[in-house]
Amino acid sequence: MFNNIGIVGVGLIGASMAIEIKNKHLAQTVIGFDKNQQSLDIAVKNGIIDGYSNIKDIGVCDFVIVATPVASIADVIKEITPNLKEGTLIIDVGSVKSSIIDSVLPFLDDAIHYVPIHPIAGIEKFGVDAAKKDLFKGAYCIITPFEGINRFAQNKVENFIENLGMRVEIMDAKSHDNVFAYISHLPHFIAYALVGLIENKNDDRFKFIGGGFRDFTRIAASSEEMWSDIFLLNKKELLHSVDEFKIQIDKIRESIETENIESLKEYLRQARIFKESLDEKR
Amino acid sequence: MFNNIGIVGVGLIGASMAIEIKNKHLAQTVIGFDKNQQSLDIAVKNGIIDGYSNIKDIGVCDFVIVATPVASIADVIKEITPNLKEGTLIIDVGSVKSSIIDSVLPFLDDAIHYVPIHPIAGIEKFGVDAAKKDLFKGAYCIITPFEGINRFAQNKVENFIENLGMRVEIMDAKSHDNVFAYISHLPHFIAYALVGLIENKNDDRFKFIGGGFRDFTRIAASSEEMWSDIFLLNKKELLHSVDEFKIQIDKIRESIETENIESLKEYLRQARIFKESLDEKR
Image (cartoon, rainbow over the protein chains, first blue to last red):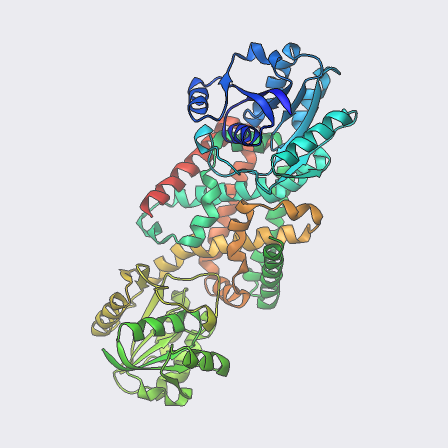
């Protein structure tokens, strides 16, 4: 149980965490910090946070959750660190880890206990209005420890995550960024590219776009602010996955070009079997 | 109202059409024709067709619906044409049109009235077991007339489609194949390529695959028999769309590589806006 938990960035993730913290009585007070006054007003009005304050007052918190846009996380931590009291626990919830950790570690004080995490709970909506109860229920939350991390702080965060109703996984940041390039960032990249292509073709005939296409491109309705940041912050891993994806495209393309139906069918069959094995694990 | 409607190929589309025909009393008798005895047995048992017969008896039908796998449609029509009685109406429901029409026209008798259609009602399931009521309700059905089509036959088919509860659209076959390359065949191609890539990476870390990825690859669980045929039958249009897609990939890739955040963000923003405009038209 914490005294004052500070949520810096009262958006989808920050506000949804605040909701769980209050529901599960994990803090006496939940205080919001956000440059956007409207977000703070909505969060107070909806009982998501107990109140809000100026970022200069962050020192009242014994636990700080940084849930600002991913590209600003390192700067936010740098900005608030001097005002934190000794022994404060601080986590960030960014969906890219290596670049944040690399930026944060150089100015991190031993008196401040930083633990980087990634709750796997994104939806295509964003902002405090999209915040909701049970967003994290049963979902994985990955902790990406770095060399020299305070083990006591890490344990505290593990307990906190479990209390929120999530399943803890430990993974190094590089592995994390590699896996999420393939299973999250690349699919978003592809969805954007496909919608971008169709958009250029825009004519009345495209009214036939059906359920399959819509499902496929649902994620292209995500925030461009967030995704352009994620793409750039995970540039190396993402571009590598894009290049590997292009090789797969060319493989299928070649089977079609040469009308090699057996090799084409076998490719599609393997993909279907793997897809079905994923569904079974659901 | 028809006397005997013959359904050649009692799979998802053929059997679902039979269900509507019977529900809407559009024929006195619905007769199934299929090489697969089990499909016929299931269809009879579930009351989807009134009975079945050998393909040599197709001459009892005044209306024939060819709903076999898309690659076999032209051969099936060629095979049954000599046994059809004069004035028989015949439609095919293939999702690729130009190549079927091109194969069928040379051996088509004036006494047989052929109308190519494409009901936009695919789901990722297949076979008679997946057949269901209302599969076509409110969906578009495209008729792709060719030069010299029998207008009287075309009108009859238009009425039939409307009676099934679908919305009729008229489009030339080349346009049809072009549009569906972009909105259906390419998305399937991409889904297969993405699942194929992840499959090659298979390791435990991929348990984090979330909702977004699953939606995205839902269509990769489609029948590889069907999709390898569609890809080959619409080869020219599909490969063209694949190459254009690769250009879009390279465009986004370039923005990330050069860290041009403004151009990247603008690309994603346009895609989101277009996606939202599609949702509004839903």
